[in-house]
Image (cartoon, rainbow, N blue to C red; front, side, top):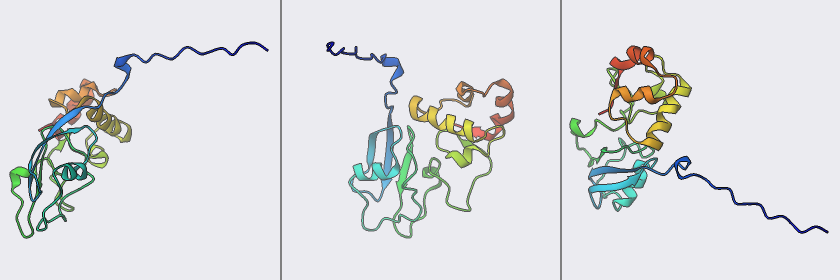
Length: 166
């Protein structure tokens, strides 16, 4: 009987591995330990709240999307019961049902459905935008959308007035 052959290990080049992107997120309001936390791309608001020690007993959670993915430089504000949410702190959070700002879509925080409302963006390109954010990090300028396969100058011209990256 012939001796068993041992296969050579497969080498994976470092650039082909998608290393997680670290992001910095600021959480304020009714949490045990407000502050800036280093999170990983793909983490969600619920992960951030857990890292911040959880919510306080007087937190109003009806307006917080716990499933929303975090983005770099995002501010998450957990309001108290009966408190009005300061407009400046809601910029990066998902809109409350029925209160959608129809002017521009934020490439760094929009979900699949919101991205598909951008002219020229269908399901595949919307997913490519989300994948880009998760692997590369936040878009730094609206022109960065042209790094997505299938989005060139012509498509960019159609959608540039519909998007922001702040």
